[in-house]
Length: 393
Image 1 (tube, rainbow, N blue to C red):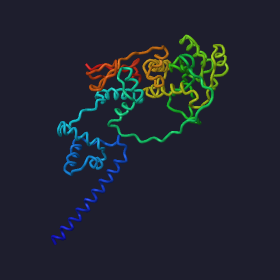
Image 2 (cartoon, rainbow, N blue to C red):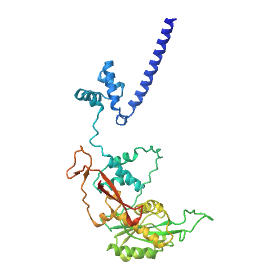
Image 3 (cartoon, helix red, strand yellow):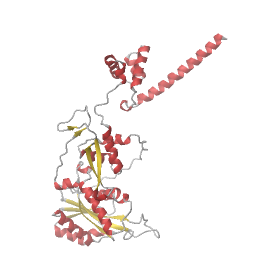
Image 4 (cartoon, helix red, strand yellow):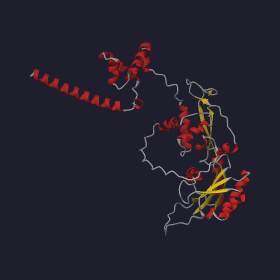
């Protein structure tokens, strides 16, 4: 009986060992299929345990690396750290020299919390205007901490390439874009009766805008109770020309009714060449369509209460246009604001280096005190923040 019991225990142990080896093989195979740069790192205590197990089993560096999905160079670097500083040197690691202090992540999160519509590149451009230079991928990692991963989005079909003559803006006020959009006042509407609402006051207002192509600055705008006529558009263009001190060489619009008749006469009288996109086709006048999208996303849809007076609506639009031109960095302009490009201004900002051991670039200023984010509200509007980065008191 004792011999039979020992044989049974031996068989059970052999079976458990075989199962453990198969489990380890499957886990190792999964690790080996991963990109080495994306594999999870071993904790310092686990690294020391691997070296102790290697010494006890008498494995070579190659065998140890194979068993734990590592490289021989990694094992050699761990052994060198142990030989030079003892076991505590392996457990105690210096932070990477390129790691940003925690307060930089707080700056990123503060901007995102104040203006959630900003993307990673826009946040990086905002901070760069104050001397703190981050890559968009760094901003993304800082925002992704403690946030569950998003589900992958379905791939969108690429828009077909457009052919035809392209007008290139060589300088500010060379090419303008003009268009109209509707700002709803009473919720949404549908195009069928009897639920349809007229796209006019008091259910909606019309916004007409002129945007300069080269600088992306808003040259002129006007708010209307009903759909503007061609003469209304011409009056807005006259005011824009007076404000800019000149008229455009080319002006781009769609083929709507407002851009016929009196509008064509205005272009001929001013010596401006009228260019036309496709009527009702998304992307044919993409520059001004993007501005309308930004205005609705960053201002109109976040208003706590939609104004009911035309004067109040004009005040909100004027505040957003001022913020858009002077304080909002534009991706197409390399992080500069439309006003800076339109006026030819170059803002010189000293680059700040908050990382203590990172080699500072020429002209950069190394800082030791933490930086804090200070936010002002343009015209008291919470959705129009003006950020300032200052040293902590």
